[in-house]
Length: 631
Image (tube, rainbow, N blue to C red; front, side, top):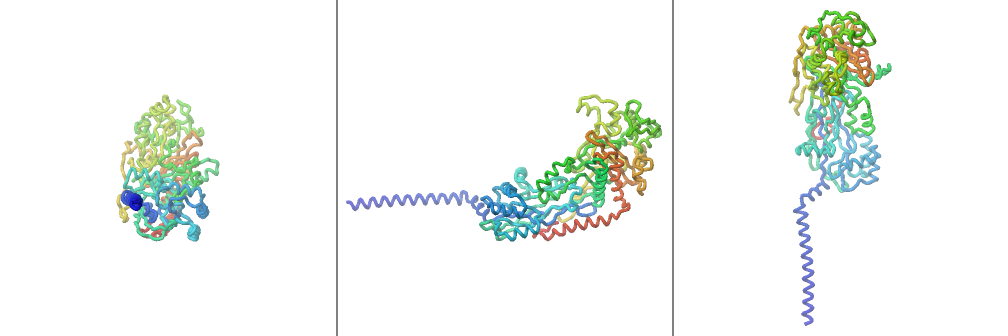
C-alpha cells in the first residue's frame, strides 16, 4: 500500500514537471512564432540594418554654361567624412579625437549625430576636408570605428562671388524638410544627403540640375566599420543648362562695380551697393547681371560656418538680394524719357517750343539741382541737359493720369516676367495710390515730382533695361530671359528658349526718334555725360539720373544703349547712395561697353584664361567617382 502511494506521488510530480515543460515549450514556440512570423520582417530589417548599410553616393549636379560654352558653375571632387549611426552614443574619447582632427567642436558633432537618430544612413560630418585630415583619419582608423572617408562631387563656383545672386547656392536636405518632401511626393528621388538648390538658378532649375543619388551597400562589422561591398546603385548626373550670360562681359561688369564702389568710398561717398544689367535689346537675352555686395556660394557648398552665416545675415547691405530684379528705387531723371514721350505724343508740347528756365518753376517753387538756370530750352536740349524745370512743366501739362498711363505703356508697375525668384513689380505714382496708402489728397507739386521720376514711383533696374530696350529697338517689348537651353542627359537640347515678344509700345515712331536723338546728345559734347563718353569710338545713347533717397545720399543711375544707329546692347547701372549718376553709375556703363565692343582690351585672352580655369575644375573631377563620372 505504501509502495502504491509512493508511485502515485511520484507520478504526480512527474506529471507536474511535464506540464511545466510543455508550458515552457508552448511559450517558447509562441514567442518564436511571434518573433519570426508576426514581427519577422521588423527584426530581419533590424538585423540587416546592423549588418548591411547603404552608403549614399551624391549625384553630380548639372553644369551651367555661358552663351559661348564656357563653364560658369560645375562640380569638383572632394573628400567627405561620415560616421555610421549606432544604437549607443559615440564614445567620449572617440568624440574628442574626431573633433580634434576635424577642427570641430564636440558639441557640433553630437548635434549632427542626434539630428539623424533612428536612421541607418551614414551621417555626413564634414565636407571638402584636406588631404592632411584624410591622412590623419586613415592613420587612426582603428581608434575611430564607424568613421569613413568618401570622395563625392562638390558643387563648385570657380569665380567665387561672381553673379552669386543669379547662380544661387546649394545645401543638404534637412530631416524635417525631407519628411515634408516625402509627404508631398512619396516617389521623390530626394533622400538623406541629397543636395538641393537653395536660391537663384540653382533653386529655379533644381529639378533639372539635380541628378539622382546612388549608393553602395556594404557589410559592416560589430564596430560599424565597412568590411565588404555587396551591391551598388549608380548615380544619374544632373542635366546641364546654358545661360545667355557672356562670361567676359560679366567679369568686366563685376570689376567695374568693385572698382567704382572703392573709388567712391575713397572720396567719402558712402556707396552702399550697386546693380548692373546688360541686355540684348533685340531679344531680351541677359548678357550680364551684377548685384553688389555679393556672397561666396562656395561657403554653402562646403558647409557654411556659424561665423560666415552671421557675417552674411548681419550685413546691412543685403548680399543675398538680387538688386537687379528685387531692388526698388526712384527712377530719377531716366523717367523723363516717359514724361517726354507723353508730352510729345499727346501734343502738349512741340519739339521746337522754347520754354524758359529761370532756375525755378513759376507756379511752384521747385528748382533744378544745385540751383542751375539754363534759359530758353527746346525738348532736345532739355532732355540732353536733364533740365528739371522743363519737365516740371511737361508734368503740369500732361497731368498725373497720363504720366501713370504712359509709365504703364512702357511696362513699369508690373513684373517683366524674367524667370528668377524675387522679382518686384515696382510702383507708379498716382492719386489712387496715395489715397489708398496715406488717405491723403493729391497735389500739383507731387505731379511735378512724378514727372522727374520722384514721388511714389519705384522701379527695378531690370525694368529700366526693358524701357531702354523698347526705346532702342523701335518699341518692341521682349521678356528678359537668362536660360537659353536645357540639355538632355546625352547633351542634346531638350528645350531651347529664345525671344518672346510680350508687347508693342503705343508711341509713334516720330516721337521715339525725337527721344533717341536727345539721348544721343546726352553723351555728346554739352550733354550731362558728354565728358564721360567723348573719346569712345562707339556712338552711345544714354541718360543720367540722380534719384533722391529718403534714407541717405542720392542714388546714381545711368541707362544706355549702343551703337546709337544699330543697337546691340542695353546697359543699366544703379549705385546705391552714389550721388550724381554721371559720376557714379556712368563709369560702370562705359567699362561694360568697352568690354562688349573690345575697346582697348584683350577680351579674348581673358575669356580663354577663365574658360581654362573652369574646365580644369570639371576635368579634375571626372575620374574621382567610380561608376558614372561627374559632368
